[in-house]
Image 1 (cartoon, rainbow, N blue to C red):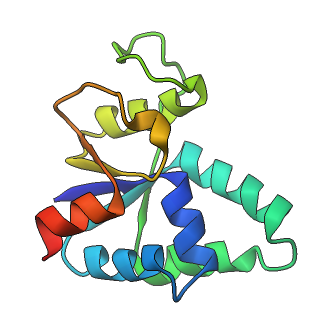
Image 2: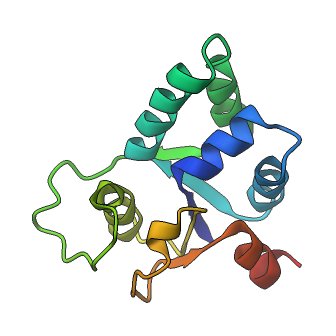
Length: 134
């Protein structure tokens, strides 16, 4: 299965290696192909520089040590038929997942709760774990 992680999952897993997101990532990585969009990775770097100054390398370590693939976010979203989402800043994440034909987008962002699409499935860590990992 092709699984894309949203920024909040990447940040939590990279900077809290004993936390729930890191444990989830280790488990999902052992069973599925995992991706992060270039947009989410850029966003994660911005957060790392602001909130984890001096420890930004943890993001690099997380990405490299886990074999997570980066996929390019489309530069122009005008050609995409995207569903409504509360936070317009999330459109690049959604477009990346749809464009790359991901099976699942894993996020903790509540702005994705009301998005109505069939593919990718948008799930929380808990919902993904219950459905695919237990």
